[in-house]
Image (cartoon, rainbow, N blue to C red; front, side, top):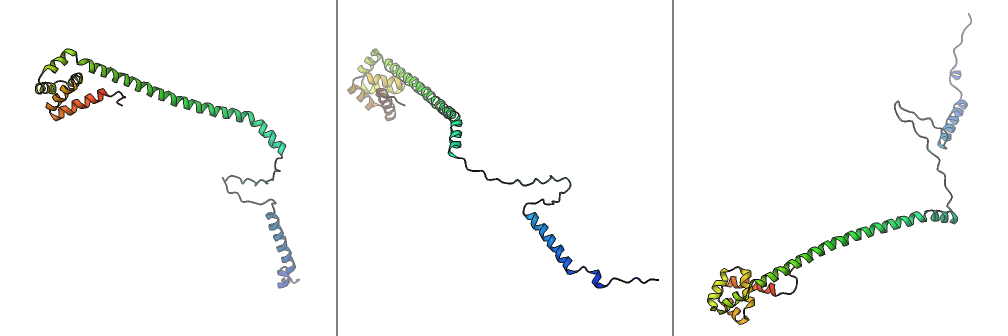
Length: 194
């Protein structure tokens, strides 16, 4: 029977040259992938496939003629947009003016109401009533005017002679005299009370 010899330890291990060549090939394969060659990627089940990175390209800077063409192409749109913005601003200004006009009309109506009240106030003191209080003694007139409506009492005092009115106010209670004086002062004012 022929004898089978067992491989020697030298035959079982590859020579060093083969190992070095395999290592060099592996290194070249790894360095080749680093320069943008196809890379093997592991994709998990159910995961999105990886998108390949796109190469970035540098565009050349536009020259002056391209810039002028671009500006001339958008000039009409820019002008229209500017006009639209100005129109919107004018609408807002018009709305503000309208609000101020309404406030001015309300103030005018309030002033006219105040003026009518003043005229009615002065008309209350008829000449006959004024003559009655003018003929009374100051202490009696002060007592009667203290219990009358304050507006009417002030109107009567304004129509009286200033000396007679001052004597009547002197005979009145301090609070009543102060109230009547305030009403008379505001009625004599020719400026809008508000």
